[in-house]
Length: 355
Image (tube, rainbow, N blue to C red; front, side, top):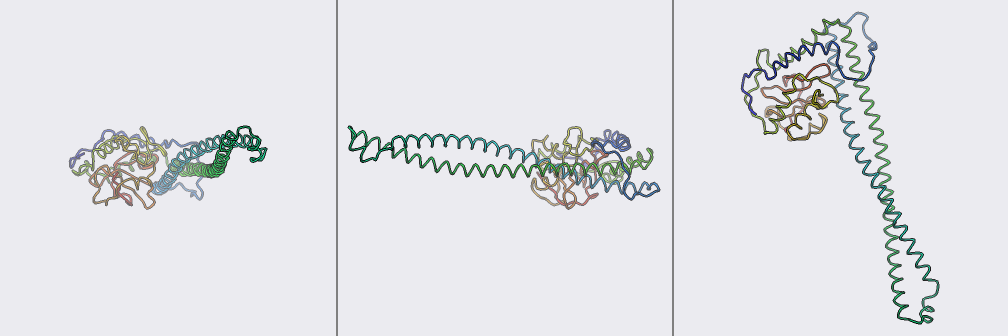
């Protein structure tokens, strides 16, 4: 996919509408998060903080919320995996118990038959039997039955051992699953707390200031992406593949969509959710979280980045965007903001990945 140099800003009309929507959304804080009545921020000054102070604190809270959000996403994915593994182990335990019961029944039947036939000394039976040849044939059958009995007994012991092991594994997985569920709830509470604190800080401003703050943030992001001009210079690099071009087109087509933590589209996204959804439109299944996406392909340097590549930000890889070209990414920034273009230099880059 080729982008013309100094091309008009793709999605400019959508983005202009989105700036207005962003101001309104941030004013109302359309965060799509459960509950959370605003509470006084510990240590808040008696005097209302300045707009600059509020922005700095809100930016920090949004960054912390996004880190917690990626932890939430990771815990959610791990929970799904554990649930599948636990279900498979439980099915194996049930099937193993059925097989064990069958073997025990077979073993009991063989033992009973041997007991019934073995009440007289074999030499005496041979002397008294009217048909010694028939007796010898039956004796051979009894020996074979005894051998089968021993084999069945060995198999029974082995199956019991494996069944006990599966039960132990299932019990451990269930305990781990419970821990993950607790971690999931904790991460969700952490996100909600940060967003509630951000909402409180924004509510310390009047509605006009909130709207101006949101509009200024969106304008600053556009200026960073366009370098202060009225056009976006994406260079003329082509995508690394047809699929990368398709993924990029999908991501750019979602400019103006709101950030909602834990969301993978199609109407709203978090940062990794936008990458996950966009590459799925190209027929590629990425991992769900930004940390996992950091290992979802070939690592290249930032100077080698091509449209469609994933750009991982921060040392802990808690944010991700998609390279568009010309030093610009498209990404879902944080709660209250919308999918937009951003200069790649606005955040510290930790890796560039080509899926």
